[in-house]
Image (cartoon, rainbow, N blue to C red; front, side, top):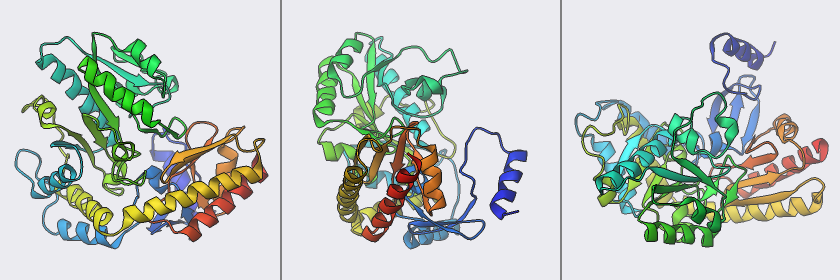
Length: 399
C-alpha cells in the first residue's frame, strides 16, 4: 500500500468528512513545487487556493518565523503587540486604509466587515442592516458570511439564514439598484469572484457601485481575500481597478499560508468598533503578524509584483492560445486577471483535474466546470509552459 493511501485511510478514521481531498498527502513544499508522501513532485498551480503567493518555504518567511518563534508566540489583545502594530502600519502605508482589525481567516475578516457596516449605520442613527451581495459570490463559512455567499448549495441544512441579505447579479448595476433601499447598510463584492468560477468585475461595474454607495450613504466593502496581496498584479485589486472601497478584507496570501486575516477601513468607520464590540483571541498574533510583514516586504522590495504582472500576462496569452487550439467544443471560455484564471469546460472539471494530477500538476475547481489556476506569484515562464502543456493534454484526454 502506498503512503498516500495509508494517510488517506488514517484520515478517514479520525477526520470529519467535510472535505473531498485529492488522493495525495502533501508533506513538503519548495517554491512552486510540492511533494507527496510517496516522494512524487507536483507543479503547484493552485498555491493552497491563492494562498502561498511567495511559494512554499520562502527563505525570508522562514527566517521571520524562526526569529519570532524564539521571542514571543502569543500574548492576546489585552496588551499591545509590536509585530501587529508594524503590520498594520505596512497595510495603512500602502493602501487607503487608516485602521486595521486582525483575525485568523477570510471568513472572520468578512464577518468583521459586515458587523462594522451594521454598527456604523446604527451609530449614525439609521436603522440600516441589509447587505447587498452577489450571485455566485463566496465570502466564508460562518453563518453570516455563508448567507452573504450567493450560492444556495452552501446554505443547505443551515437554514434559516441570517436575515437582511440580498443578492444582486454580478456586473449588473441595474440589478444592484433594484436591491438597494432605505434599509441597506453595505454592498459586499469580490473584485474577482473566485469560487464562483473566476469572474472579474468590470471597471464600470465597480465604479458604479462606488457611485451608488456614495449617493445612498452606504459602505462599499471589497472582499480581497483571494484577489488581494499581488494576485491581480497590483498589491490590492482595488488599485488595479482604480476604485477605492470603504472597507477591504484580506487573508489567504497575507500570511503566505500562516493563518491571518485583516479587515481594513477608514478611521471614521473604524470608530464604530469600540472596546468589547468585536474581538479575536489569536488575531494579529506575533507569529502571524511577523510573517505577514515579511510577505509585504518581499512583495514591495523583492520585485515580486512586477514579476507577477509579467507572469500574469504570459499565463493569459498561453491559456488563450491553448483555447484556440482546442476549440469551443473543449473550452467554453478562459477568464481571469493577473495570476488568477479559470478555464471553463463544457463538462464537469473533476476528470480533467484528476488527469492533471496524474501528469504531475495540482489545480482545482472553481464551480463544477471551471479549472482554476492560481500559482505562486513567483512562478517562472518555463513553469507556466509546463502547466499549460499538462492542462492541454488533460483536456484533450478527458473532455
